[in-house]
Every structure is written in C-alpha cells, then in structure tokens.
Image (tube, rainbow, N blue to C red; front, side):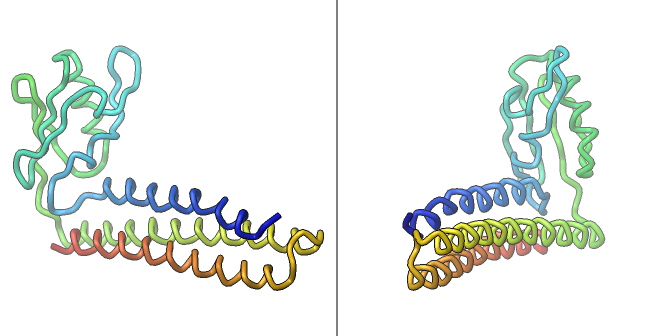
Length: 185
C-alpha cells in the first residue's frame, strides 16, 4: 500500500465538500436575485414532489427580481405554495402564466443572520475536511503498524495530508469571503 493512494482517495471527497458548500452558499440570499435561491425549492404537483428547476424556467430579468415560467400552467398553484413556505422572506406574485418574486432590501438584522448562517456552513465544511484528514491519517498509521508503509513515508504522508487540508481550507475560506462580500453590499 502506498500512502499516496490513501491521499488520492480522499481528494474527491474533499472536492465534494467544496462543491456542496458552493451549492449551499448559492442558496443564501444576498442583495441580488439569483435562480439558485429558488431552483431547489420542492413543489408538490399532482401528488409528487419536484424541484422548481424541473417544473419551470427560472430567470432574473432585474437585479432584485426572479421570474419563474412554468412549463405547464397547472404547476403554478404548487409552485406558489412551495415558495410561500421557504422562509427566505419572499412573496410570490402570479402574473398570468408566470410567477414573479421581488426581493425586499436586506435589513441589518437579516444580514447578521445570513452572516451567522454563512459562518456555520463554513465551519461545517472545514470540520468535514478535517474528518477526512483524520480518516486518511488513521489509515496511514494502520498501514505503518502492519508494515505496509515505511516510517519515512508515514511522516511524508502527514505533511502532504496537512498541505492538502490547508489547500481545501483556503478554498472554503475564499468561497465564504466572496459570499460575505455579497451579503454586505
């Protein structure tokens, strides 16, 4: 067993952590409208649950407005009901065959709540990355105990694992800083 195999095995998992964080941060509302705010909202249509992106075209014609154009008029009622339950402070308005959402300006209290939520998600991502590091390190140590990994390689693995973790922590911090900036604008 080579220690590099162990490290390479956790890289895709750490990529998933960063990808998941990106998706989660996309759902946090900032001053600008974005389809990611509502595309994963689950609507009940014909007794089945679907994410909005499967039921409609979602666009942002203006900086503070989201336009939802259902593929079928019969989806509108389910879409409006789902949007009303989201808890992100939006009020859907039906306009003929479309649903419009105009985002109200962010209050200072709401911005603080968003920043708190952002730091929670950032910390969760960092913890997951650290958990992967611990798992890989345990595997390296087990390999060493079994005589499959040399002592020099064990210490190289520890250094490389720490470098990898530092890289992913940096990616997580960069994503969070970018989102903080958007929220503060």
